[in-house]
Image 1 (cartoon, rainbow, N blue to C red):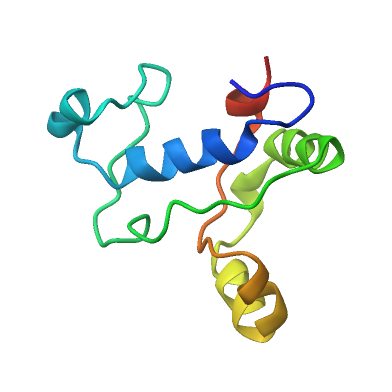
Image 2: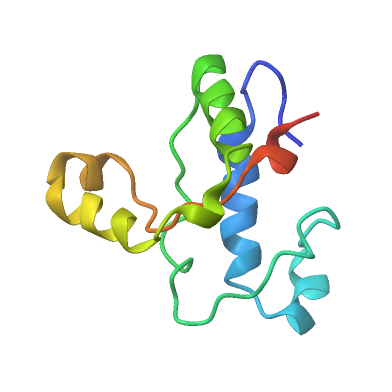
Length: 108
């Protein structure tokens, strides 16, 4: 999905956010790409915020690939909410409120 030089990661993530904010039965009408269509619809407006996603460098892309390959089943997701609340600077820098495994999305 993403280019090795990381030039389109922001577009890939924005597409994923739009997909998860669009009910499955509406996706064909709004142009959701086939590769994103299998992601779940997340009700509750979690992904309804701005489509602006920060641009990533090649190094940041490599970090995304690395963390996407970690075993997240042993991580309590509550820790992410706590970290964002404890770090206002981080919360201002990153507008997302969720963490998703990304490796299959960003590998080519």
